[in-house]
Amino acid sequence: MIRHGETDSNRQGLALGRRDVALNETGRWQAERLATALSSEPIVAVYSSPLSRTVDTARPIAAAHGLTVETELRLIEMDIGELDGLRFSEVRERYPGLLEAWLAEGGPAQAMPGGERLLDVQERADSAVRCLAERHPGAAICVITHNFVILSLLADIFGIELSGSRRLRHAVAAVTTLEFNRDRRRLLRFADTCHLAHAG
Image 1 (cartoon, rainbow, N blue to C red):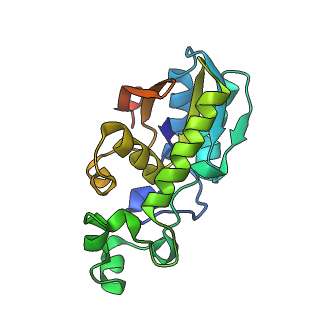
Image 2: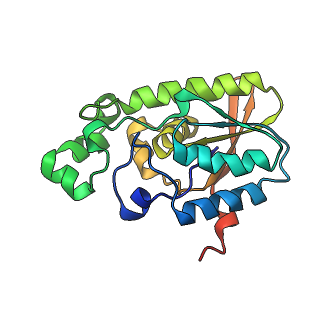
């Protein structure tokens, strides 16, 4: 499970949901580093959110295994509605108290203005990864997706409240590895960025 490579929105610290922004130069470099790092893994399928930043991260990984990227809508980033593209200072100005409410216990059940709930993200993301795991029993697959999708899945795996997922950090182009065995899920690697050690 991989978070897409860097975009200019990530670098500038802008809120980023379903706006379809491209990888920047660093993000494209990260995608190539990921492909090299994962080239020896026995990956049989590569799935991606339909947004270009994930598809373009996925393509070099898939190419290294002679595969094509398959898109899965349930892996798309959280719809953050009217917050998309704003700086966090702008969010605080336009929506006083929203960020505090978002971080509170009931935050995941509260929809973003014009968007969706984190609870909905967790439900569809869990459905997607379970479906893909069942489709490829005993095989290694690669899923390229987004921050809120990954954090919501990890909250469930770590057994913490969904509101606590914001305390977790998963950098762009980081790799997390999960093992599915019937109804059991095991975390093997978390937010690994060793393949980016020589970033310029």
